Image (cartoon, rainbow over all chains, first blue to last red; front, side):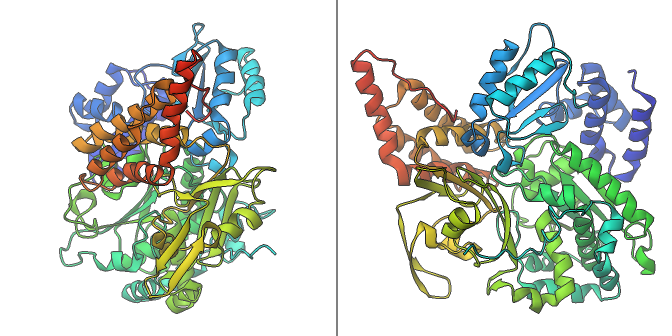
Amino acid sequence: MNLKPETIEKIDKLVPRYPTVRSAALPLCHLVQEDQGYLSQEAMEWIAERLGLQPINIIEIVTFYPMLRTEPTGEYHVRVCRTLPCALAGAYQTCKSFEKEFGCKVGHTSEDGKVTLEFVECHADCGKGPVVMVGEDEYTDIDPEKAAEMATKMKNGEFPKGL
Amino acid sequence: MAPQETRLIFKHIDEEGYTNDIDCYVKNGGYEQLKKAVTMKPEDICAEVLTSGVRGRGGAGFPAGMKWKFLDRKSGKPIYLVCNADESEPGTFKDRQIIHQDPHQLIEGMMCAAFAIQAKLAFIYIRGEFFQGYKILERAIEEAREKNFLGDNILGSGYSCDIIVHRGAGAYICGEETGLIESLEGFRANPRIKPPYFPAALGAYQCPTIVNNVETLCDVKHIIEMGGEGFAKIGTPGNTGTRIWCVSGHVQKPGYYEFACSDVTLGQLIYDVCGGLKPGRKLKAVIPGGSSAKILRADERFTGKLKDGTEFDWGIEDIPMDFDSLMAVGSMSGSGGVIVMDDTTDMVEALANINYFYAHESCGQCTPCREGVPWMRKVTQRMVDGEAREEDADLLKSIADQIAGRTICAFGEAASWPVQSFIAKFKDEFVEKAKEQAARRKEGQEVAKETTLI
């Protein structure tokens, strides 16, 4: 495992703060995923080893929580909220606009690896729907036209990746 | 005239020039209540919270002071405080504003609560999607530590407590307090079997634990400031304090609005506060307390008796926004997420959207929920895909009836209530959907209509 020194430092600081070592499992998944982009088999085994757990203890967490990934995303990770308040504001049309621009179906990564387009559930900003996340950045009130503009910029590499 | 907001918790939200750093907070009187709290007896703070009558703002509306009373103090085990910042009930976006714009209010409220219950350690369980919020809280905690508002020997009181911000990872079930605790301990967030009914008896790490919502913990700060009795003067008896209503859906001005309990009716909230509906549209339905709450139909009459015996006869617009009134009309105030739907809304699609959510979020522990909720999703999806059957409404109700009350946690109800209430109030539309499709099939037309909500 080739983790960045700052990730190792964060991990070493975090683990002893918890009453039990196992409590650090989910935070470590986050930190390693942020470092590597996703959680490979090797990464999950490394986390287990670091916490004195079995690999299955980590795998069962990774397969439970939607935000943890076992595969890398495209260069841009676009998440469109599809839950009712965003849907009432037109989120499905927004998503269709992204699909058209990227030439890729929701739930997939474009063939050129540029973008992963996903539906996600409520992001708790329902007053400003449709809500879209690019990486860790949130964008609100994204109608189909705005989505098309964002997509064009992403295709040209002119949009922040939100990492 | 639009009714006046009472901004207690949201006093500084969206205020020009107000920043989320500690200097701004202190300049505006911040941490004065914590200074006061550490000079009080912990049991006196608990008594004030009980007197205040403050009810949990996360969904269930259970009196917070009572929850604290259930703490097992005899075991000698450490006590933990957990702030539930998983804010995941669709339609709810209040905690986000507090975390982003006024994080120190939450930290002060938490430290007051932690001191009152003599917690050894406190956690903020924040939803994973709040990347920004997580960073803001981490920074705010460091600022508070530097000023000795948390950490060792807080303000020279001899009391020590730290806060750990723990990130979730996209699972709705972590909002359920025992699921949250499992997640905190490093497991899948499968809610725990009850009893014990309250983590106050047995919670995180098998120790007594208090889990409170962000808004509830902020209320604690204000209860110390104005005293339990002072706080109880806001709102009405049994419905004390303010509530932050998050309005989304088909209104002109969606947003968050804080009112004293009962100070605003649903009609005033929609028409006077949120600017009403789009031109030419009519109100069709409202889900008043997050997507789990039972839907209310715009042309219903609500009659019955309140807890105190008062008889009521309300149209949807007359319903006072508080815990007991919304419960009396057969729904709930839940987490304060008001989802408004106008007459362009296809109710089958809306339910299909909700069922998609709950099927996605079931933790899979209990069979009725794991199997039943995806089944309900399948039925509503089939209906919008052009294969609706006239008996589907009854089928959906029958599935929902077999889930509710048969699961370890309240998710079973949360997933069933929308189905039960949509069928109870809009059954005609579900039957009509099947008839329409049959007619189109007969005429050789495309059977399924283009959908917008699923």
